[in-house]
Amino acid sequence: MKKIYEIFSKRQKRLRGEVPDVYQYETIPSGLRVQVIHIWRDIWGEIGHWDLRNSYGNANDAYVFIHDKLCREYGILELGEESNPYERVGNYLLNEKETEKVIDIIEVSFRCIDPEAMDYQLFSLMSSPDEAINELNYRFREHGVGYQYESGQIIKVDSQFIHSEVVKPALFMLSEPMHKGANEEFLKAHEHYRKKNYKDCVNNCLKAFESCLKVICKKRGWNYTEKDTANRLITIVFNEGLIPPLMQSHFSGLRSALESGVPTFRNKRTGHGQGPNQTAVPEYIAAYILHLTASNILLLAKADEEMK
Image 1 (tube, rainbow, N blue to C red):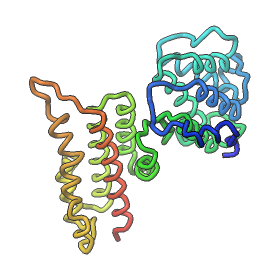
Image 2 (image 1 turned 90 degrees about the vertical axis):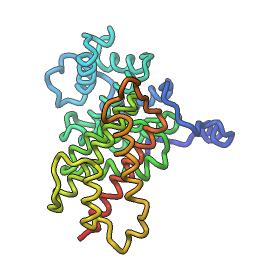
Image 3 (image 1 turned 180 degrees about the horizontal axis):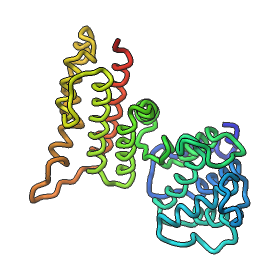
């Protein structure tokens, strides 16, 4: 990432142990907000003109697009009174106090940068979109802010190791067209987790898990129905030898982990009514289920790749 330099003051802070080693999610520091604007400048430049509103092929119109998209979703007419859209979206990013709305504008702007998020390049770019996305994710980590941009949206990150070794590979695998449904459900689970809707997070984890199993069954021509639950689908893939017999001793606890992990927790706590007393899913349980889902999806996908 050529835009990032290890300056003296940052090296000294790291040596003194003054860099954050635990993620926080409540505030987006001003320095990080300014660095996002620097990335925008690299990608599109500074000046946005309202008279280019109808010619979105021009890079400057990215600022008009971001402005108008947010205004429509928030049910307002303007983000501010500045004379051009670059200043309006920039000042909104710098001054907005509500963290989720700051994440909104970062997410919308990076969808405009990321050609895969829209399936085509909406705006001409002055530098590499991959470089811009990599720098954004580096800046999140640098400031100890637990978010990353992945697969077209900002997701919440608890552990950088788990994210890089489990969640990110699972998202990459789910980006295949045949996994479109599972991908949407898994990303929706991340969105609910970021917004602290933990019960909805768990529900969407199970949907993604079941969708992945159904894709494998359909691909292999194994007998299943769309109404089959996770437990039934797990039985099918084991009976069909998705996990090779010679390796099943090494996976003696796998069926138990799969059956008592995502499906059972969802069924017992969130899937079949709550009765007179409402149940609450704690954040740490939602995080565990989210990561367990990613691990299971990745394992099943790898097993499917290896199966002849």
